[in-house]
Length: 388
Image 1 (cartoon, rainbow, N blue to C red):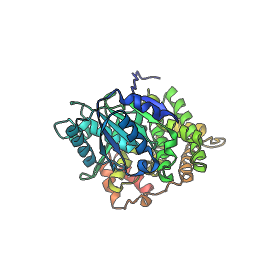
Image 2 (image 1 turned 120 degrees about the vertical axis):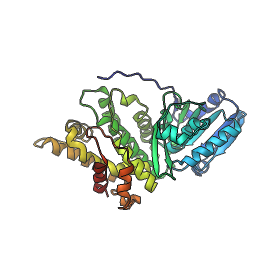
Image 3 (image 1 turned 135 degrees about the horizontal axis):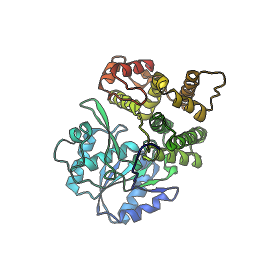
Image 4 (image 1 turned 90 degrees about the vertical axis):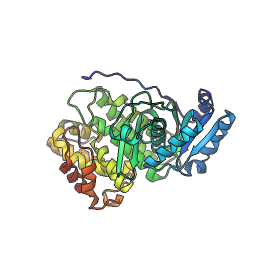
């Protein structure tokens, strides 16, 4: 662990079949006015909405609702949420759903009392918190983003064709508490389940493919990857396998609550490319990541060959006997791609709604960066053509 670090995460996690029983005690810590934020109709169909509303009534809360949050939350929804916060003097934002709902709730919490242009200050300039922040809590129904235990918020500005992520300063936008019941994920459609799995895997790889040192975090990352692969295969066979779904849920939370990033330089270029792909196509985030990742890693692997060889051997059990390091690395990347196909994820950008004319626009608007190899616009465009 060659880099100094400070680690703090103030989110309280209630995990398991009885986790909802803690909502009553937590609500008593906050004022009477609650903004309930959720997606479309899934939580009503599953009964989670009724269960939460009953608890809110029992605790004497006055509830304002913001429904219909998109899978790629819109800046217009952030502004509407901010208006509701101000008009109703909201004391707590309770996000019920997956990462998109929680991301949007954090954005609302940060933006509601900002007197200028929140988009420009918080997302484009990545500016500091300069105003009152409303507390956020979550009840998780779909795994993938780890938004339930971090300060990240990815928002799409449709007018500007930009999808931008912001990691707010700890601990301001960390959820105060998050309720994680794996049973709530049973009814999530297969497409959303595998999108979440791909998102988790990408989070792990973005942190893993960096650095040349012998870092404890890399060993932990490999372990979580192995757990995720095993649990995902079981969940494909039986979506109501509690152990499998609980392991996937905890892999997601661990994957991006900063604990596995300690002493890591990290990458995140795949996410930057996918954000702009999503801005143009509105494709599911994890699915986009799964299409882009193999092409990106093939493009950069020779610049971090030692780590890609380690990935092939330790995660995918590739036998390197008689093979060059590059052959071994490429076999590991192929095993990754094969796993995504096993999940039923499409292989090309065309299948996600991208047109060839979009590719240079996506490349031009992507934030360049990268880990082992610093990407520029022409490199990003090459990767997009490779997975076209």
